[in-house]
Image 1 (spheres, protein in one colour):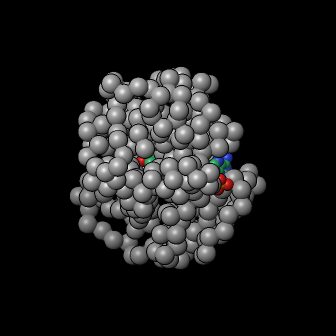
Image 2 (image 1 turned 60 degrees about the vertical axis):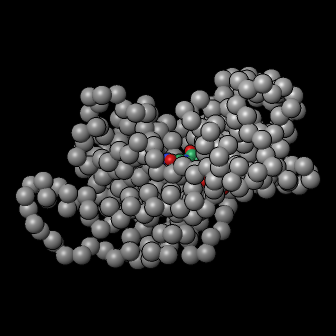
Image 3 (image 1 turned 30 degrees about the vertical axis):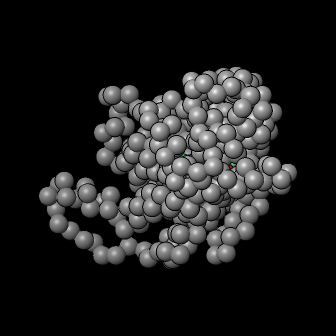
Length: 310
Ligand code: NDP
């Protein structure tokens, strides 16, 4: 394989080269500015390439997305007619699991309230709240990341519901799908976790109408994409006390501009889009497996369906 790496992240070419040299020494990795003819590349690993850029490489058999969200790649009308796949690894799932578990426990065990009490100089415990078995956590998106998080929360003893576009089945998780499934799930949800991809159908999904269908005192957690949540609606729901709190890894815009009122909101935690990422070395088995599959004409894993939008 001769792999083209298209990403403007500083140092990424050297890092990938070193990771590939350790794990799969037969593979060559080059940046676009090196003296390798465009026709010599048969695979590409890309993050936000300029529009139409991939058209310059006529012999690509497969394109790997470095980012988990592929909305920008899909939006390129000149994207070549080459399979686009996302890279996935257990390490990436584990990172998201950790972030989601932290967010859920923050509300479940009341760490948000203890922070407030501490700021007020109060040492106080009003007894244990509901146990995990009485707490309903709903996970929107049951893909590679959502499914892993739903299973982890189930194993922690929570009542877990999951929501997807098409019907899914996960042991011990009550799975719902489609718009009717979402309406059914909201009224009983104590903590809502969004791990959806950004598509036309999920843009703006977390809005005033949806928040109003959650019970008073529910919490909202978003690590999908910022454009899925309407910040002004979230602010109103937090200010009115309808929502107890929120934790966001993604916002729109990202980052929020300096002075944005949500920076200081007492019931909101914002992390800088760090919930999960792909440690380079962990991605190599997924990359090699899919390359082999494309050579043999077998089904690809994590293949992006451009019509579906993810
Ligand atoms: P997948 O593509 O594996 O899964 C997407 C899931 O969302 C599927 O279950 C799919 O349903 C569901 N879905 C898509 N559209 C709808 C819809 N309209 N209604 C209901 N369900 C829908 O994605 P991943 O799990 O790998 O990643 C999810 C997202 O997480 C990424 O797209 C990215 O935006 C975000 N992310 C964020 C990171 C961070 O650090 N904050 C890091 C990595 C990813 P179905 O099962 O029927 O196909």
